Length: 297
Image (cartoon, helix red, strand yellow):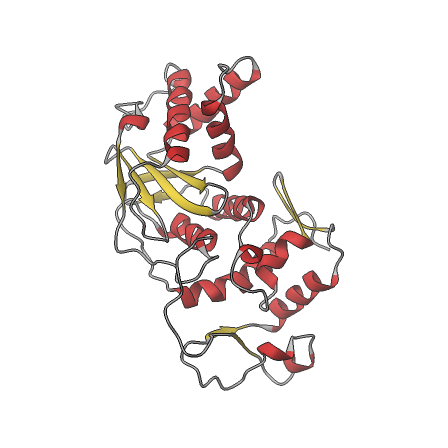
């Protein structure tokens, strides 16, 4: 999801699936079976037999069939294809939709139920709630009734943690991670495009609404971490020297890795665009085979 250009290359890189003899009998697009890649620009992806079976299952089902049901997230075949089809051209068809990101967030929450990193305890918010907060902040009408109760519930959750990870969507075509870091009293931005922006309107409005959540919950939660609820006034710092995308469609996948590896001061694991290309295909398998997936059959 970006307009960043690919590095110049005389040969167009391709996805290379390394398969053994048994796996070659499976339904694999012939254009992507390359056992000995001569082009150093190729993205070499090692796919196991179970992973290939999952990918083939996705490709053979009906467009509207729900293949992943994790928590309150339902993902249809037509959405999962952005992960499972190695022949898709770079661009909008490969963009990650918010349902995929939220399913990954639920899996991360389940994997790390007490997620403590260098700068304290982490809460990863969903794209759905971030978008709800943004919408409420942009509304001409104040929140009322159930909205007030929900905002207070969100605030109580935030006040029990030291860092809040916010998956932010910019203009409907780019994902980046914003981190509310109470230890630093700053908002940290991890953007796979590496672009410095003076104004991030979608983040500004989301933080404005988070302030309201914190104020509503402040009387009911005792915390030493939150000395200041005015997060919309905190310094916004873009984190430099992090892995960046070199294609037009991987920002959502990079953001998932930032969610997983950011400690508050650094990424605890390095990765490259090639690793992300691997991750794209493997993520379909992880979602489909997850014990949290109620749609498994």
